[in-house]
Length: 242
Image 1 (spheres, rainbow, N blue to C red):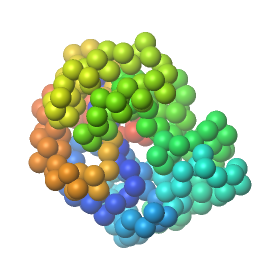
Image 2 (image 1 turned 180 degrees about the vertical axis):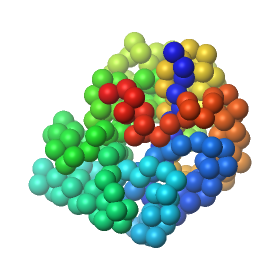
Image 3 (image 1 turned 120 degrees about the vertical axis):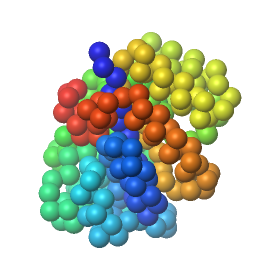
């Protein structure tokens, strides 16, 4: 089975425009999950920037204002999910099919609300996976573009379950001290074994880490190993696998 690569960027930070430039330079598809505003006070993309980004990439919803759904009641969760979708669709002039749970904080009622709102799929923050799972409203990932400690990987592994399918990727994550070496090793393993490598991250983190060169180098690695038809956005991946 051919390996597929997908990439998703969360939170709608203005730095997403810089990531978009890198992605386009390397011919890599991606999905940007964008809240209309951010309740934590962080800057978000303007409507014009969202429309510009949407000309080249899939745009998904990230609630109305980056709200952790598990912390609010069902009425507020429904409003966050529906209104975030509606506002983005008004800006873009087309349907928004994908959703991402802010902070990975959600419950079973929220997956049902996302489905009822008309989304086709939703992405989580479960790491260490080389598949899409069985539930289109709980799409997992492989790793975040961030220098997590080993303890973070272990906690994510223990909390999210599906341990048999994730054990080998966990071993790779624990084997490498340098976080870029870790991501490269996981990607190389995916290329050799087949499946889906799903990278996700935040442009704000890349900026704070001054890791733009590292992101550029990793995307070049992806483009050098996988043909363009094997580089898909989250929506394309969902359509292929669910």
